[in-house]
Image 1 (tube, rainbow, N blue to C red):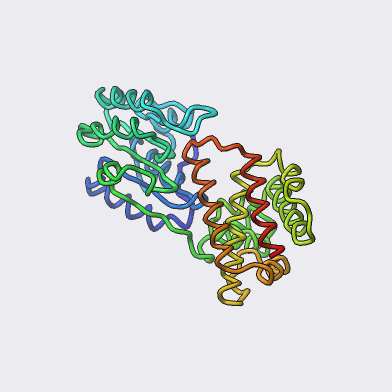
Image 2 (cartoon, rainbow, N blue to C red):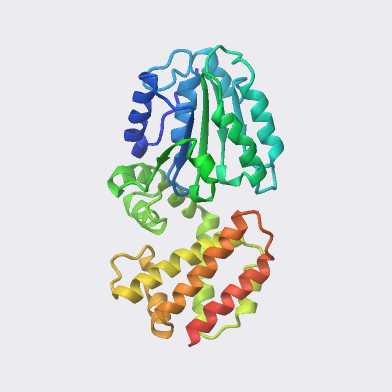
Length: 329
């Protein structure tokens, strides 16, 4: 018997809303779950998928019927998942054409057919347009579940055909105990929750040894830049690290810098342990210049996520040169 699939604790209120819709027969044919990476969208989606396919659902899927056992094994004939191919960033039209064939068939288990697309914003324009017909005419007992970190990157015609459920970062009280069980107590849980901008699953990622090591290396890099180190040489020391992760840290730190520069208050900082570095940066640079650097980092990260092919080392060098120029201004 498999363990019943439940959403994460802070998503239980949204789960009760979904369950009420399903029990009343008012579940829409297409749902879009959106929210920042780390809020737990997949847990809500997986609980709904399991309960929708379950042959004897209760509060959640029963976990022991034939459908639940198939789902636990990794294969259910009435479930189709669409993600980018390995090593690719985009979902292309061929994968969506397979969906169109899938929804035209009768459900093999006599219940729902469920299609999951994640991340939905990875669909290119051709794939998005191909999906529209199935979203418009899905047939009976068909459920589309789309997951998106950035729903604004979806075509408006896709968004308009889905019921949109936006998930925000939970309150500290709703997730701190859960985090503390997985980290070294409440103090560490609070530190990483704060560093992650209130996103519990992102907090767990940041607390992993490799992520901690990268954070420390970046801290040392910016300390070195303050002391006059050569930015291109510092970029070379980071050449084996993920550019997306480096930019993510940089964006979070720039947002802290801007908060400090505008208010002078340190109480709202996500990374209070970096306050000495922030103070030096605020002293040397102007807030409007930090905004420009923030825009640059966000744009480079957007290009990475959109399937662009920037040269990571050149992007990193250009970014650190900009940091260095501001720190020395």
